[in-house]
Image 1: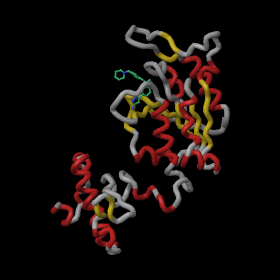
Image 2: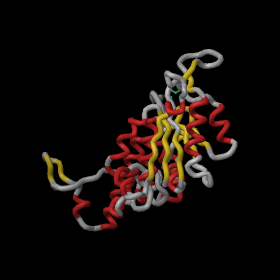
Image 3: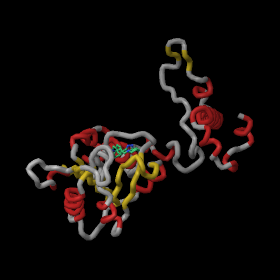
Image 4: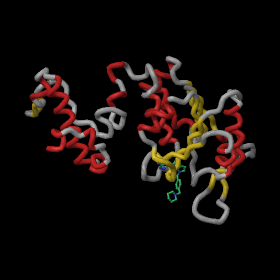
Length: 247
Ligand SMILES: Nc1cc(-c2ccc3ccn(Cc4ccc(CN5CCCCC5)cc4)c3c2)n[nH]1
């Protein structure tokens, strides 16, 4: 997968050299290209923002630098088109389902903005020829889109074949399709069996895999009910067996 990111703070993406994503890049699974937006701002101050038409707080990012930067990225492979992903507080929610959709794409272009966002004509221009998604990573306002891109690249990158070892498969993730779909993870434990007077639940030491699976599902249901009751309400009744209903 090729990933391009255009930003006035490309240094924000240093974490993509580390750990899981860093290794995926070394192994050629992920090919990430960072671009400094100001390289396409040709005035002496390399200006990328201006006051908003119609008044209002803050500044808006000018269309010209973004247009030239995106055109340059698109020229990298004229025979293909990236999916353009625009982080914004007013976008569609970024979910595990959307992460899985993006993980199937050969080329993603992220356009993290700053200030109050990008002149809306930029995405209108590209939206007429390719998929442009406005995406929110949560109902809170960040200072810019860079952290949102880090979130999405990590969530998508870990789903790519070969990135997670088999031992850490993403198949069992919360929100991944399947039996534990839309349930939160239950508690996890490792050695020692007793730590500061706290013991590991006996069932986990029993070696009885059926009972362990049942216990884990019960704990996932309990935690989901405690922290995200709306997810429980959204569960398909078909997936709740009679034992679940007693919890
Ligand atoms: N999930 C999520 C993504 C972002 C995100 C992504 C990209 C950019 C680019 C700039 N900012 C900061 C910004 C954007 C818009 C406003 C306008 N304000 C929005 C809230 C309602 C009132 C009007 C203020 C500040 C960004 C913020 N935050 N949270």
